[in-house]
Amino acid sequence: MELGKAKGLISIARDFYKEGIPNLYISNKINEYAIDPMVWKKVIDSLGPTHYIAISRTTSSKVNLLFEEMFYKGNILQVEDLNEAINWFKNNKNLLKKNKI
Image (cartoon, rainbow, N blue to C red; front, side, top):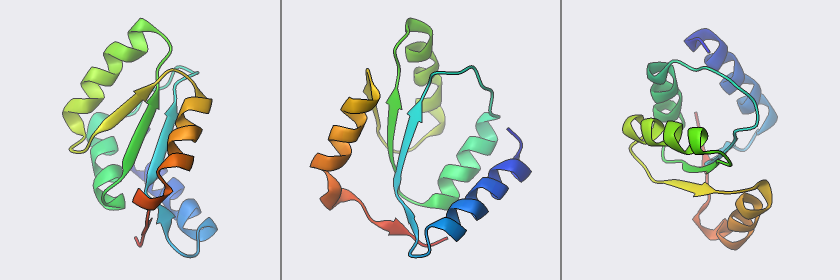
């Protein structure tokens, strides 16, 4: 993904979430994709402090997550399925806020 596309997605999210974008990002790694690590860093930096949950089912996606951790300053929670990510969200709503961007 290029920076222009990423900025477009942020703009769509900003329009959808009038009160600010929630600071939770769930990456459900079910499809092959490619994003420039420097673009990813700029997107995350623009969103502010973010809770990042990565759903990683395969060995290769878990290895890729190690690389993602090199570009992300916060903690990445690795879970096995979407239900586990949703349960974390439900149990930790007090940690979430809305980022104004």
